[in-house]
Image (cartoon, rainbow over all chains, first blue to last red; front, side, top):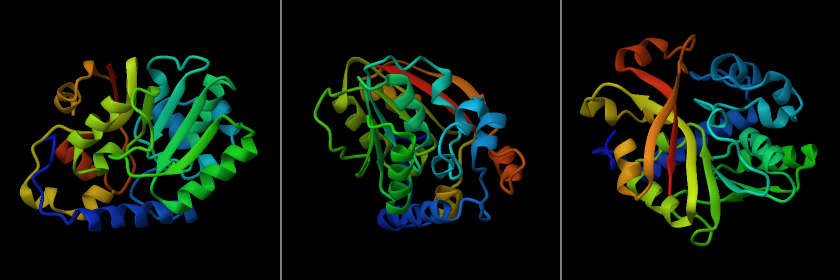
Length: 204
Length: 45
């Protein structure tokens, strides 16, 4: 995948389409979308622990639409500072909050108000005070340099046309010795210009 | 994606696992056509 995809899409329109799509998911997770959602999907397709997910508020799990499982890689240590890019309804943040414990902190970053509302309700219901959510653009994080131990994300970076900007920003905020462990979409074939410019494929 | 991660300065960037994310969705056919799937990435600073 190219660092900055050679597309003719209006980036502001793309952001608006992404916001609109995920606002619909937040408001009606059972709606008709062309991607899976929910705890059962996460367990069956992605290897999450269904019992652990069932212990979380359904507010957080029902709209989950990730594409992989960051928790299958390295453990999140107690006390770590973790950020989740495009945290959605907050399911991965709650799982991260349970792992880092009260000595750690988890910051979910999202740009969709409806998802942020759900995520905050979920964190309150789960009584995880170490988890908080902020509205921000992923390419301009409201975080100091070298202030983060681990970055997680699940199916979000592919939605952003400027991947170079995203990873440069992550390099700025991650501490030396810190890491990225995230899930995203990969595409094996080179896409035609028409396909790259199809906004429905980006927002899907 | 791996190249972009490395160019930003991260080390040992790698894909760890793949997922058949679009199986049994309305996009399964197009996902198979283009080889679209979920993947887990890791990289270190």
